[in-house]
Image 1: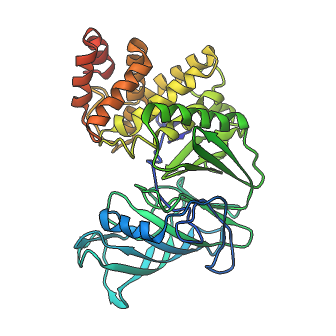
Image 2 (image 1 turned 45 degrees about the horizontal axis):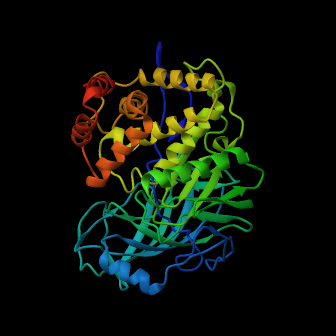
Image 3 (image 1 turned 180 degrees about the vertical axis):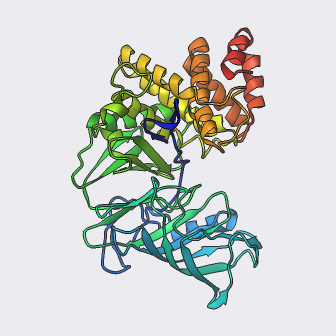
Amino acid sequence: MMFSGFKTLSAGLYVYVLQTALIFSCITVAQGASENAPGLQAGAASPTTAQTGPSAPATDKTAEQTRTTETIPQYDLKIIIPSLSRAIVNIEGTVHAVNDHSAFAILPGQEYKFDIEGQPISVQNEKELKVDSSTIFHFSGTTKIRQNAKCQANGAEFYCLNKVYPNPELLAAQGRYKCLFSTPHKFKALTADSSVIQSNGLQFQIAHFTKHFTLLANKMQVTFMMPGGFIPDMYYCRFMTKTLKNYQEKFGPLPFKLLHVGAIQRGGDNEVNGSPSGNLILVSRTALGAPLNPKTATPPGAKQDISESLRKMVLAHELAHMWFGETYLGADGWMVEGIPQYLGIVEAVRSVEPEEAESLLAFLAKAAEMAPPGAIPNHQLDSPQEFARAYYASALAMYEIGKGIGHDHLVDLLVAVYKKNKSPTFADFDAAFRSQFPKQVELWQKSWRL
């Protein structure tokens, strides 16, 4: 998610612009220099880049067994970063077909040649290829990525967030990525681990990392990899591990034991944002304590500086995506982004002074005014207004319900529904609430505008 300020769209109309880093989970492997190597990869002049940092690699046998039992594409990529001043990547790689009607997404800026066992093939965007399910596609070429909020190369760093898709992608809901980066001298690549399933393509940060440290959240290791010139506020790092610990107790264990956290220069001092992908979260430097400009720190509706609660809301939101959007699914906007936002609000409000909590909620209420009228549930994220409905209106609806029945009780209900059906509809939650809290049905209906 991204927090910036309200921006004028037309006379007298202000919109709080929030974009998603949807999840989640690009499982970009720690795009390591060795097979399935996690985390941080050192730069080198050739593709034989060495990797540093802790590792818990899967064996080749395990990877092969997984491949035969799952319909998840397995990417093996060599990625050359010619420069940190241009968003250009040269990629050579392979991917295993997952069925006999595979198709690739070829996006603007991608120029690749494909072959199967050395025999060239023609690949067009989303055109089905009649192949055996055991087919291995080989491809090589260049991607010139249009720079925007989710992809920047500024000379000091190069980051590519989820849903940018720097490499050709098979049309599939998820994937695994084992990557070997070749980067300019002294620069390294930070990615997720190859053993982790990801949902929205390859995410990475290329930077000159000079500081790293590890904190614990139960048995989970959280490794912070910080670029040169930036020192995070440990207060927010510890908030992340405390929140992660709470979430593990509420939502269950994650399918990995190591979480990577990086800090990028996204949005300058105008935003607080984050982007999760597999076991990697890239957050803005402002999320870990870098100063916000006054307009962002005191947005419309707020009566005071709410920097602390904004940071906490965003950090807790991104951590919630480790479950919501990965383990717990759903097409409805309130499920995709509203639940993580609600959880972020709860964690922020509980941990700041009452006056700041009040200002945070007032700001969110102001932002929610941009949501379309009518019932909140059963809408997908397909317009700016729907973003306001999902991020703000739905999150505040749940917050009001949580105030009435207790936030812990509401969270327990949400999780119970998901455990019965990993991709439920609003009707499933509605039925569960009416059954468990019959005396609070009026609050439920009013909050959701039913």
